[in-house]
Image 1 (cartoon, each protein chain N blue to C red):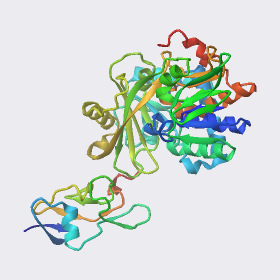
Image 2: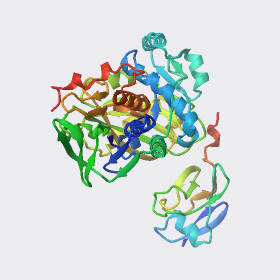
Image 3: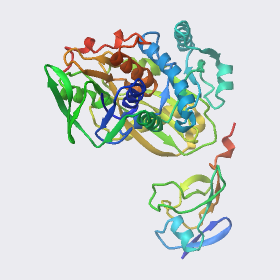
Image 4: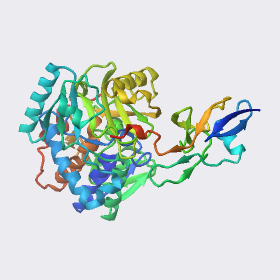
Length: 89
Length: 378
């Protein structure tokens, strides 16, 4: 098994697994906080359509956890809001 | 009265006709807002129209959209008075834009010329290379599918009937006058039939014996991931106006970019005459994205979530066709609004209701009369 980090803790994954599948397999069901109501989100459709499972991967926000293949040493962090607060004006 | 088509124009025709006391049935082959209405951005623009009949129709429509917002609740269809910002890249382009805006002001369109500094105040993320622009406070936006649904709901509350999944096949005539339409669900009697079939208005008009030339012009809309409000208005290049009016068959591109209340940024606009083909073209998408980044460098690292395609229905002279068809008594046309159908729908619906009931029209119907196109139809 290889591992990536999620909010600082190691998450093991099997070759070919997506970030979303590995997180669920590790008992982690949510990794985003919505921008309006601050509610938690994780996998919903699981097939790349609904954009509910967005997460920050190696600093880039809005990655679909169900579509991104896990790689060794990847840094995955919970996404809050749009993930682009630095843009506000 | 039968209205063929449940897009925004058919919905507006049904709304104003049922409010005028007519007994209205809307027949729609597919679903509400399933054609061009559901494939655009929902803009209600004054800024892109030169003084003339289309602007007169747009000004009347803008007034009616404001009334509809009060009456039906603009929140329900996300009416937003966001304003438009048109930008120019060169000093000559800016001078031409300001001259165009001055002519529009004489015709009743409010606008404020912006120098480069004022442009940056209006849209802080715009490229600093631009020469300046013009702000049009009267440009608005609605969510078009919700707006069509809202107008149809109000029409039904006034007695109209909506039948989806019903395709119009031909006309029924008695002594040369329409008495109804033949459909996939049988005969539907009517004294008046309004062709509001949008991009398919040419085909429907031919089936009803009064062919008018309506042709498709393909466009794509790119949708980004949701962002904080980095783009405040609808922002587009002054080149866009020239492209809309162009008769060239090839690909035409001009950047049209706007933030939405849901946070996504919408990017257009391409125009291609490729028939009814709605296949997404990756090279065109790439060019649209590149020109958006040139205008707003901040978009460079942003992901697109999706791209959708639509067909704008246009007439050869770029004016919609609204009015009675002299060849088939009882037949009226209300289509060919190209990319401006959401904005022009209320005044179109009002005009159709006025023509049927004999009330004096608010907008001069002559420039839109189908007669100008007869003979040009296939």
